[in-house]
Length: 110
Image (cartoon, helix red, strand yellow):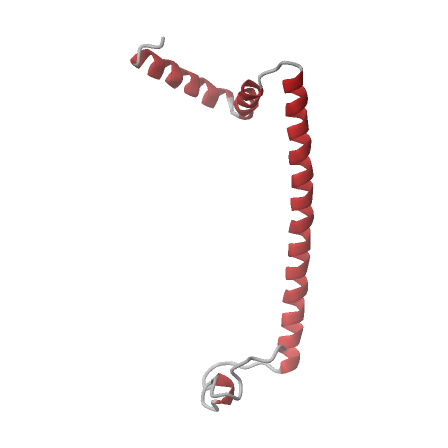
């Protein structure tokens, strides 16, 4: 267990009445619990770091594909819009298209 900076310097570690009514655990129990939590935390952090690296690699790959499409004359804004539309359910896409048509008609763009 890591020592607390305020123990023995007027903090709760030096107050004999502080732990009254509260369950306490031995140093062995707290090291075991802390050890398990610390190991689990380390594993989560390392896993997230690996996934972040993979995400960055994939983002760079996607950027390259957009650059290739642009170099062949495709409009990348339209490609992004199509990808966005393909992610939607048919009903949601139709609802958006109807609202877009309605709004365009309302401002004289139809």
